[in-house]
Length: 202
Image (cartoon, rainbow, N blue to C red):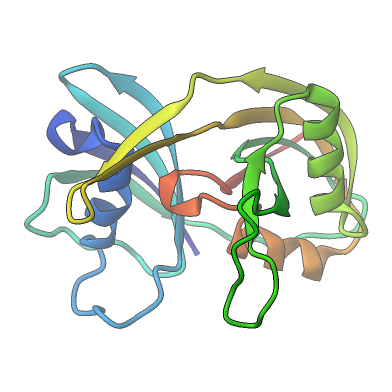
């Protein structure tokens, strides 16, 4: 895997929906591949641009895009049971409930709607559930964030979603499952910069 620091111009970074599309252009000649990268906005300066941390299975390539690659390094995840790490995760904690209008999906079942978890205790339980049987959550700080607003130009549709920034310490219990989780990311809204689990040894 690779970890990259990317700078994206304000023209694209101002709309969260455009960030993922611009990052995808750093992997040319792969139009039919799955977008197997995760990212997180680290710093954003209005009318200037955005600094992004990106994790990818392939090394990003310079392209004719508004993205500028600041730095790239290989990311070796050789882990052992019992190791401890400081971590950071921006996530979109949600729960699914039945559609209020009673709409039915193709399987003849009531459609499910995603509802954000706002209560901190619910958010903590959500994260504990995601990490269960993989690693132990030792300490946790939950940082509330302002809602993210986006616009899909082709569909002429706007929306918003809520994110939470988790910081804390964890201990590895099952290294293989943990590495798989890191590669896949945690929770929904990955196209909007959620799911990247950053680690620092302690």
